[in-house]
Length: 335
Image (tube, rainbow, N blue to C red; front, side):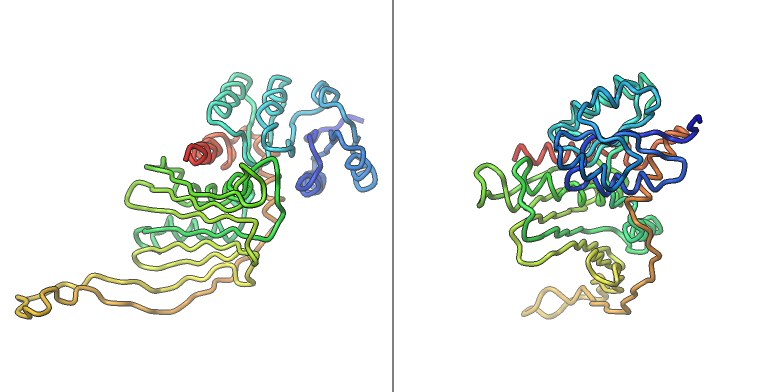
């Protein structure tokens, strides 16, 4: 019987891979024909939980199959570029778990190959498909917050400590991606990083990343896997209103009608002991916690990749967006 849907192969099924496999496998008219993993334990996991998927150890076996139209890459970050390049050269559409690559030059190479072959390349920046993140995007686009002044993020936890990448490359792609999405992917004016390695030499466990954008917008990203609490919070401060997005709270979004406004000063100031007249007023209004209808972001992300294969529409987290994220991370690595 001929299969008329999308046939995928997934490379890697470790920590995050099972979540991707579950979502892609559950889509209508989508079949994950292969999972490639070097670990016999992970292949056994696939065989036990996804009996319709072939578990193999050869990348070439999956890429050489003409039935496979797309490849999902869920391997360590340093392998993303080579595997994505190999898949594109084999004529396959590519979905790569974040980050897409570790250098802008690598992203540009993937872009060139994809354009030459008219193939889709999409990065797994899952939070762009989160209903709460999209809600804030609508607020920003509508001007509800006024002029954006600064954005502050915290992505903290105690463990899981990794040895292949540091805390910045592990956590910060999420927050950079969200901020870039909210601000329409601007080019930063400057990027500055301060980090420290406490557990493993040369691998920072905690990092503070400062980004300056045009229009006097600043962002500060704090990531750590040595913190006593699990925190996933972003605060956006605007001239009219402020928003707190807390991903671990029951109410994900809180909108604060608060701010400091400049007051018009009339007449001449005659108080020589206090030469600066009162110029500001403090505003404190209601707090709104909107009800948001959630679907699993990862499913929405998987649907977007499959739809892009079918209709050729460029995904939101395609190469232009992924390039900006990698570019900021690469600048941060330089200091």
